[in-house]
Length: 116
Image (cartoon, rainbow, N blue to C red; front, side, top):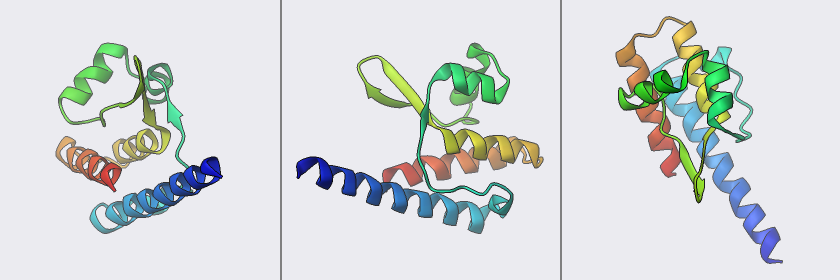
């Protein structure tokens, strides 16, 4: 019973966050149509982020410091991860030629969407 309630609440939060992210990006940045975000939230570790972004570990942390990549989410203990869709969105922004300032706005929007 408790597990079903928790599962239902997680799905509800995930759906709302997904809708919020999609709305922000559609309204503000107008490139989400090419991304096809399906609403599923999957976490990936640093090694996968490095692979998907084709950057090194130091460059990845420098991008976080400079506001060009979202901060990782602490999953517990020493475990951190990123929502996979955030990495895809930022890669799509870079591919579409967004400036660093525009990418910082996207990162900020993604951080705000995490709060809902």
